Length: 439
Ligand code: N7H
Image 1 (cartoon, rainbow, N blue to C red):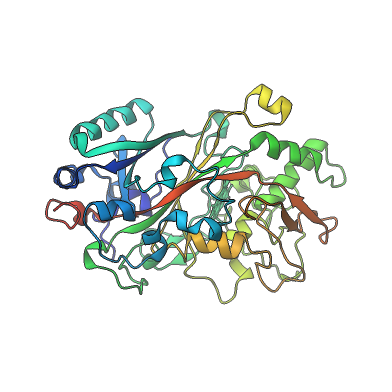
Image 2: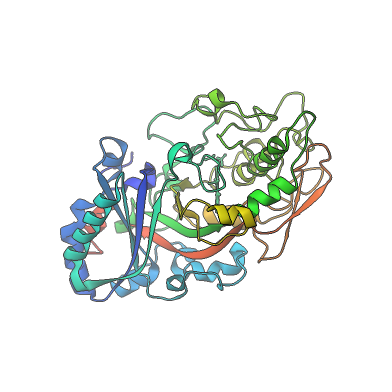
């Protein structure tokens, strides 16, 4: 079974505090950094800690391949996407080049990231000062992103207004599964764990591959599109029609109610009930799963990224553990008035898997961006309306309008990739004084 004292906390128990800082650093002095890492290791939050009483501020850490190289660690971790770096996957992900990327992610200077999470930004700054003192001149900041949950009743909702973090895979042997969760072998997330058949150096066992993406969201543009293309079912107000189109794009209403269970209206008590809010498969006894998208479009974001009964035999490997948070300010009145983004906001997307080209990259490239997926439908689903990427070109989506499911809607991008990086989140043992990364 898994050693939860040796696995980093965020990997298995996504940490969803109200504020998070992503501190991306370069290593200037490998020998000094390694010595300090050995001293610092005991401050890193483990999965045992994250699953129970959490410290007021949690700390997790990951390294890019550039970072491992700088530390003199050239062992092959068995993941080509990781070793080539995210910038190598620009085309595969559907990004329109790197023109919108945060500059640091286009260089080889990002060697690692600290993820600091807490209920207060004061705590985070204190922890960050501690880290700066500990590592001194051996590291330097390359980029920093401060993220925080949205205010008031929008906490947990991302900037388009939708509740995030509802459906996660259930890791076999770790806690109880909720109805509708996919059970996965621990090796789908954790290197060297049961179900991971890739060869890894033994010191890396217990680690995980993390994908970071800074995904800008064009919220005023999204809202204006929904208003202009509202789906007016009988008796709907314009606001209901706009909400409905948004819900069809996600496969859930803003409050999290799955369309598969409640296709024409949100149901708050269903949405907030963990026994019910994920308990569906898209299959229904009297409906044809290959042609019926009256409840939920084939292209909906949650159907593209977790096809459930659409995908037979059941998918067991292409799962990810998500730990994202919103960044950036609320929409200003002038932004909504002119339906034009003026301030950067979006999702600091984070997910974990043992193999990036089976997890994040697979979902993005082979599912969200592939118009024929889910396969075997009477018409091609088209792009995922939220994250489907066509190198900056408009995206065709079918099935959004339940009054006429053969209607194709052509969508501009509402999500703009600002790039990111791939990180290895090592087991605690590799960072102890006698571990591979500390000596
Ligand atoms: Fe998505 N959002 O925050 O509004 N996502 N996501 N995602 N996503 C989901 O079930 C969102 C992105 C997955 O098991 C929900 O938790 C936004 C990428 C997966 O049923 C919401 C962006 C990838 C699931 C969002 C974004 C994924 C999922 C429904 C970009 C992978 C679970 C709530 C800005 C390549 C599916 C929930 C399941 C659900 C949001 C990106 C993957 C609301 C805005 C890049 C696997």
